[in-house]
Image (cartoon, rainbow, N blue to C red; front, side, top):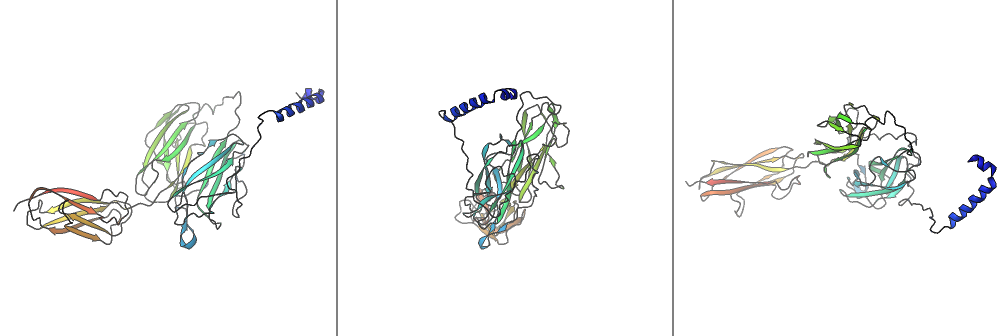
Length: 427
């Protein structure tokens, strides 16, 4: 081609001009458009430089199992934000160079301040991916969720890229969990790929990591659910996976039950149960082939992180037992009623009231107790009173109820009563 250009430069130049003119005047010729970023506003605290090199994958940010600190807000309230979920663009989604996309995160207002108008999501570190330095965030009341989005463009060079963002108050104060989007710009496929020894080996990855509840809570069991996939060229046999509650060096993995075998391009969904004894924003990590039994084509892609915002535990009051002495009671004679109440939740209660009804159809309770000091976590109390039945019954249903006035916010509000049947003998 170069030799032809050397011999006939004027002829080719003319052809190019004619073709260009025809292209510009062809019907329906497309005009390039630019996708505008969402609400671009300059920020005095934004980090303007991209920190990821196009020739090396960005290192994941250090994380800890301790909660993200609250930040003081107006009038003594606190500012905070907890990551909930990726609504769009899961980690390691692939995009062609220059492809535009919108990343949407779901965040929870975990502080006590309202996110006021003027709150921003600002770029913090990594690769800006052609996005703005900040975008507007909708107002959100404490405890509510909000979806936050930013328009981005995949970089031109094949690599793995991460862009990290954080909320910022109208006063310019950053707060809450740092959130990120991580994408892969793949290398162009070749027409005649050359098989390699690495490509013929298994390649185990975790394509998805989640929990089976939308409201993880201290003291309530849940399941860690991992999607394990073999994207290599041969079978991965008899491997295990593990999970740990934090990513610190002294945080040990717990091996999940069972061993797995996956053919090329096959996946399996596995899970393990866990109970959080504390509450915080946890950065957890799963590891496939945790025993390193499988020789893989890529040994560096076996882990995946998951942030879990665990809510504080709650009390849970139940009536364990109703006992009579003597048993059964006798008409007209005093007997002692014992009512045993337990708090089987993970937090202490405040004050509450317990009642015992001699009959579920009685107009008023026969005994009532006020526990002004409440009950400690996993605490039990036995209450008693004296009662005499004025009549005899072949069978009568009695009832005890804990927290009759709903003074205590509980994990389960439906398990506070116990019915017991008993005869009342004739004298």
